[in-house]
Length: 414
Image (cartoon, rainbow, N blue to C red; front, side):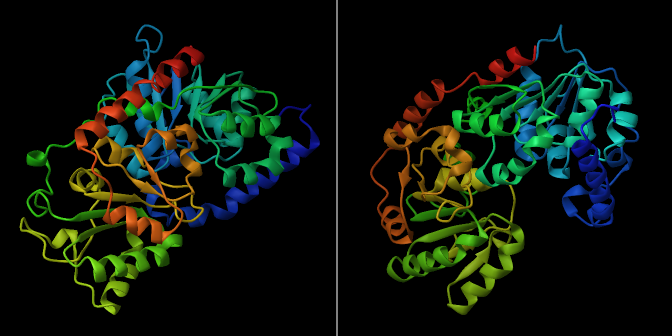
């Protein structure tokens, strides 16, 4: 650390280093961090120099990283490194078009690990962190080695803001060169923490990701073998633990008053499946795991989804949809996906994680915002008479006015 570093910054990094030493043994048992190979300790990283190092924490950020990679000018970025934290993120990256990129797991943010091993070996010309990746050790190492760091497609939830704000005096000393936020609210939050950074706004790259996402035709939908045309089919997607009681009341009401309706229940986390199994058994509601259905029409009231990667297919067949995490202050989940399949989704009043879509979105008619499970029941049972084709047309028109965030970000880092 530089001799002229403020005393409070030196004390912070000593405590930060000790905190990493304390939590390190526990990290070995976290499923999402496996495999725990030597790259986690900064060893065996790809050999630089690299024109650009992109860090994408997990699945969502990995998709953004691939979009950025596919649009980088080849004459300027001939050698790129992309890192991720989770095995799921690595799986997404491995499936992408990465001829000009090297992949690696992100090393732990030990204070002396970054400048001594990682940055010396990687030797990037620039660093791009996606969304809310704030790593003090890495930012300090980049400042020490005069490597420009950019936080792109930057967003900061209220929860993250409250966590980082008390550290703003410290983090301000580590300010990245540029932060490009996806909304003016995110811009304000980053400005309160990183006063020395240049901060501006951009369109969210997630809009660009949807430009090639088309609706799934019924004959090509892998779920069409057991969900028949015209079947009353409701999807409850990405249900969070905090809203389970409300959704349980909703399911009982639908089951009692609309017995011919089939409900697809997607818990946000698979570990909650056993909770839902107990609830359905306790109330004598007929249910089946998705993995147990073998190409035959479902006669069960509830399909409890225990397979990954099929939510968008379920949206494509749904009569109506609720996107979870919005009935309680959990930030919300992606309500744009059902729109891409021609279904106007229902969401609750809490969708802070997606405020970048814009409050004006409520006036487009492409979303039903409800206040409680009673209103939700009414909308799910009587969703309206919109045609899928018309919804998709209106949604694509909305997207066309929001795109080009990828090119904005690349223009800035270049």
